Each structure stands twice: as structure tokens, then as C-alpha cells.
Image (tube, rainbow, N blue to C red; front, side, top):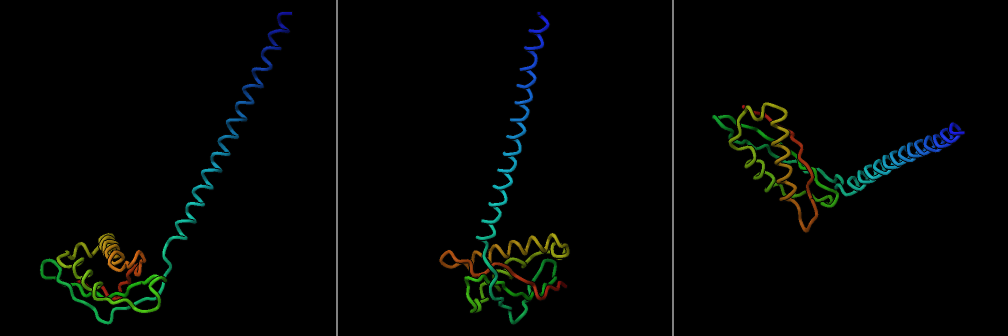
Length: 151
């Protein structure tokens, strides 16, 4: 008779353990699905708020910038405007000045590597976006180099 009580007491313990495992597994699956949905929906809102490409305004002339140690940079570029800027070309005077300020005094070694060029370009784009933002509207979103020659 004592054996019957022991086996009867062990049966509910196993089902409780199994139930806890099933509940924990369900929570993990639901939590993972919720996290996945959160990140996917958050990515869509970031894309929706990003400015859309508009017209491109090309600089008519290249500029020559003094680099360090007697070297020069011949630079030509075009600005990628946003859709908010409309079809009218932006005035490039400030873009010329910002490009000259950004590159003057740099070394050829800084400009010789892709990482160096990309860092300087990212810095210049940030300054251009700031300079060409009017009433909270970004008028420029990028720059394309049409000429980039060091000597």
C-alpha cells in the first residue's frame, strides 16, 4: 500500500515539470516574436522618415585646394538635393566654401585611403546638410565627387 502512495505522488510532479517547460517554451517563442515584430516595424518608420532624393546640382567648375606639404587637391562635385528642395538648383557658394574649409591643410596620406576619404566626405556631408537646412527642411542630403585628383 505504501508503494501505491509513492507512485501516485510522483505522477503529478512529472506533469507539473512538463507543464512548466511548456509554459517557459511558449513565453520564449512569444517574446522572440514580439521582439522581431518590434525591430521590423521600427525599421519601417526609420525608412519612412528618411528624406527622398530630388534633383542633383552639379558644380560647373572644379576647385583647387591647398593640401599640406605643398600638395594640391582638384575637386569637382555635385550635390544631391532632397525632394523637399524642389527642382530649382541650390546656390553652391556655401558648398564651395565648406569643401575648401574641410580639405585645406589635409595630407595626401589622409586622402590616399578609402577610409580617410569616406571620413572626410561624411564630415563634409554633415556640414552641408546643416548649412542647407531651411525651416527644418533638409535641402541637401549628399555629395557626389565628379573629380578628385591629388598632386
